[in-house]
Length: 233
Length: 256
Image (cartoon, rainbow over all chains, first blue to last red; front, side, top):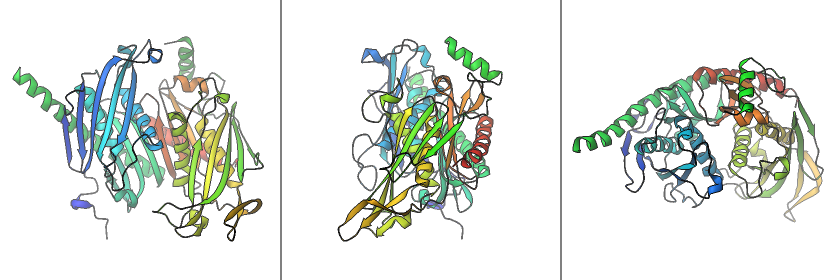
């Protein structure tokens, strides 16, 4: 009996993707991304003046990322405030986004990225990165490329794209990646589990395919907002 | 670009490093076990001038509700300002938290501790294993030093006795060894000027584009990975780094 995924999803198929740019009016840039029922909102403020002043860098902007889960986002309530997990995810998110930016163009400023997970059903860090990358583009921050992100795993011997819910228990590993598809560079790579070197390499290739799909959707979402705006003007 | 960065990146392009190492050469690793008497297990690891002590303490506590018949593992790292001018006082920052979580994942995912053997009474009482990592001198690559120190400390951990009548842990009496069946080894590789270097020193870390840590098990399978740093990896670089890490992990495992 082969492993059955929710909604008859194929092993190499992504969950339904939903993306919307410009969901937080007050922010300089913002986006909502949902993969299945995992849903995140990201907002970008900046480049703006950084306080306290002694933290300013005279040569470049600093990028600050904050990932947080809404207390109601999981079955068991998430305690508000930073946890070790959220601090780590905030850091790897920053590392995933920074390669796409030209921080040296905005000395002494900060670019602040806030990510809130509204509903969690696996893959929150990757959904958050997709949203954050869109929000940065929406804010008009120059970028080398968009960053797309997805997690892959291996369930009952088969490579599986975009793990969801209970699949995280069934998989031999959880391997989230972030990738700049045009630039062909990995900006996030984490893994836990137990698989061979060969499997790791195959999974990374599958992840790239997933990111390429998301990349298209991200571009569409951006065009949807910005071409509509142009038409109005 | 500053002069030091220029120097490091040019010399790497020529296949050498500032301290005279080859690109794929680790600094000398020295592992000293059983360095703290009061700890259940401990180890001091030196990689070049980088020095880390890991200590294992054990206590009895409640299991997590989703694993009622398994012991609890907690890894923590504290970067004291004693070890580097870069470290500041205060609660663990994101670097310390990331390091602890990389070490934690290597140990947890390799299943190196037989957690079920740490159950005293299902759902109520289990052994808790605390691994505390304390850098003594930071000259780069604290991740590998900490990971090696953690597994070395686990390997010489002797369990204290639990007095069930008095519900008290007796640290005076040490019984059997902690059931450890794997040796997960982290290998960190930095990317500098489009070249890969194993075991980056502190200055190399300051100017590297990015790094990746790959943790391997006894059978060369991979149990944890983590990319860090401001740059990205191409697929070729990534695959090369994984190959290098498997090879280097094998060599390091023999030192334990």
